[in-house]
Length: 163
Image 1 (cartoon, rainbow, N blue to C red):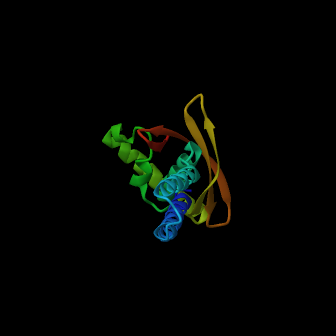
Image 2 (cartoon, rainbow, N blue to C red; image 1 turned 45 degrees about the vertical axis):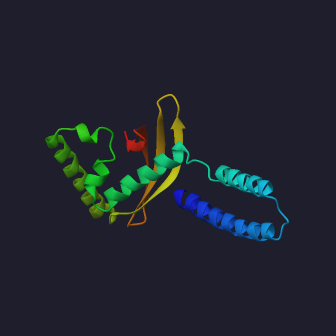
Image 3 (cartoon, helix red, strand yellow; image 1 turned 60 degrees about the vertical axis):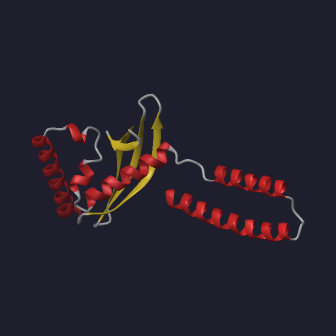
């Protein structure tokens, strides 16, 4: 989604620059007053601002969960671990046990299903009572089996983390 918003912003900016060039030519010809130009530019900017809306919590949590599980599938266990709530406050011994567990899980999936080949988002649902977003991910394995898992996500300090 952020790529689409970025492309929309760039295209909108390019369109605005093109319009401003035309308006300057019209103004030079004396057909448009300065006040009208400012009002028009303000209107265009308002339309662009409304068109580039904020990313929803479901979208942000989905992107984060998909990214964390992508790290896991690629064997990037520390990056996956850093996506957990409280990862920075766990004792070093427990942290190492978790990292070893992640490595064992990926090795098991490699042996049983030829590894995790793709991670994609199926759905996301916000639970306003608990303040979490449940992200439904589909893990596609090398042997063409797919599995749907639920990853509860919570926002901490502007960052979405696995619960």
